[in-house]
Every structure is written in structure tokens, then in C-alpha cells.
Length: 91
Image 1 (cartoon, rainbow, N blue to C red):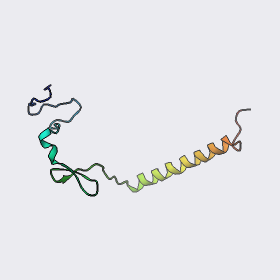
Image 2: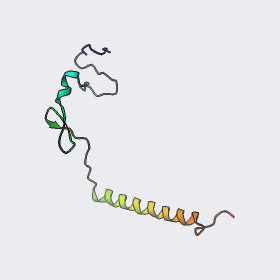
Image 3: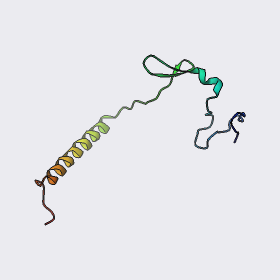
Image 4: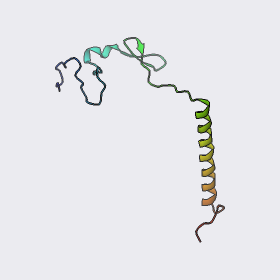
């Protein structure tokens, strides 16, 4: 692995977990980074996408709603059990 201040070979990964072709930004490229008025990050004039939007199918949405309702129901039962109003399993 190259040390700081030396050049790396083409295709050599600086860190094993980085994908092939990805390299660190050099000091000379730091002036290409910028921040827009809305706080968005830019590199060489192009906005960097920092999040991805996902879209659920109707069935995935249904299961997500069912999971949320079931979680809320269990939470309500646990609160009532804690307050002494729930089922008394142990004597």
C-alpha cells in the first residue's frame, strides 16, 4: 500500500473494503467540494446524492402497516400489564 504523499497504481484499492475504482480525494481536488445554499453537498458542480428514496409495493405497505399496528398493540398490553391491569400469569 502506498504511503501518504505517494501515488497509487491505477486500480489499486487504498482500503480493502472499498470497491474497485474508488480512490480518496487528493488535496488538489479539495477545491472541487462545495456546499449549496440549501446545505446540499456538491463535487465538481454536481450534487452528491446522500440518500435514496424507496417505494414500497402495496403488499409491502400493507405488511408494514400490520407490523406497526401489532407493535403498538403489544406496547399497550405491556403498559397495562406493568400497571397491574393485564393478565396475571405468575402467582
